[in-house]
Amino acid sequence: MIKIIPMTATHVDAVYEIECNSFSDPWSTHELSFEMNQNHTICIVALCGNNVAGYAMMRHIIDEGHICNIAVHEDFRQKGVGSAILKGLITAAEVRNMVGLTLEVRIGNRAAMALYHKYGFIVEGYREDYYKDPTEDAAIMWKYL
Image (cartoon, rainbow, N blue to C red):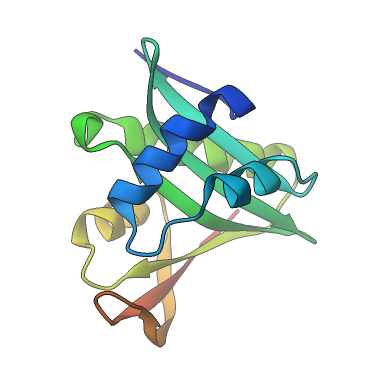
């Protein structure tokens, strides 16, 4: 069973581990903690038992949500964790009357793009050379609520 709950300080080390294994330019524990304590940021974790299986951070900017980070621990991929996290963000956005959600994703990350498409996100544009290590363009995706 996957449980989505707000991120707390007790989750930061596990989230940092997922962050480091998922991104070439990971956020530090200080950055994760700082963001978690901002009123405009929604930070959630997915728990499978006592394990942090994934997490997401989304900034609430005026009437939109910008998904900054979403990642799943490699041991829990392809098990519905990403879907549960994304559903949690969509629900949070609806509760806050946001008009839409946006994110950037590596154009080569087909699994992530397929997940976002499944939940109604569409590609609205691209950012050239947005990612480093390796350099890659980002697709800008939106879901309108």
